[in-house]
Figure 1: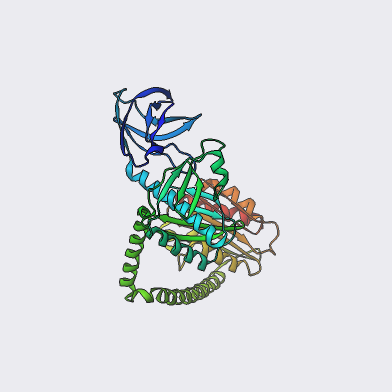
Figure 2: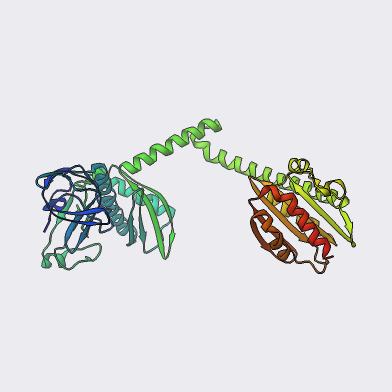
Length: 421
């Protein structure tokens, strides 16, 4: 069985080992070493990475007590192979894992909040508590945890006997029944755990809780430890400095200034919406005035944008015409314009639009016009645009990639609609 030296000394960065066996599976190799400092994925902690000889370790896992190292090629050597851990990755995970123990212990001590979920990821770490925590409670939790970091409490590994185990006040029950390993943070925490950990809490540096939210019956805390927290503070400090310079206010006034700008922009957005709605009302009125009259119906056939309409010569341009639009609305505004028009009695709308290399169509009619099904009609004409569409009886829309066929498709829709009046 492989000697697991990551349990003997989690701070070992380099070691030598013999390759005792390997298996090839789908072009990758699963190596067994006689001894290893590579931690296999488990207990919530991701696997180590690094080098075995010149071969890069992509993953490490444990199966039936044996540790396997996944590499893309076999090392040249078999005996006394030089191995090297990705130490930054290992130390980062030790900081996060030890930080989780400390945070969970303090949450239980301060508020009786037990950790019922835990995830250690590549970018952040979360714990889930069994009771909800307030913003004030989270602030105090973060402060208390960092005070314990400053005190540089010792982190120790214990292997208690079954009798000793029964006397220990463990924060949670062990998940295995034998060879139980307990992580002790002096006078703070006793927890069964198979992961790698720091030697003192001072090696954590700091813990920053960056988010908390209600989750199930409790709270989910997202936090960063050590270098992750330092990088996060550095990044956010740069953002604050940039915002301060852009807004020309002090750090203390950033929030109030942002709130003021948000309110101002909200007011402007409301005013712009009102003006846009008024503009659409005006255009709807003008389109209705110039609409073709046929069988007691107003027919409005319009191609957008105006530039596209002017560049296209069709038979209909010289008599009824596919009239150029006075504005070039986006698809949302185009739907609003169509809805305004069919709010009038006996009105039919045939809209075409080219936007960002896509051809779009809207077919709509007032509900007082019998015998027209726009959902059916849009499906009949959309193949010309190499697209599809659908909707309801009185309002349907579609899109396709054959932009150059847009005038022809509008003409086809016009012919089909007028033939059914």
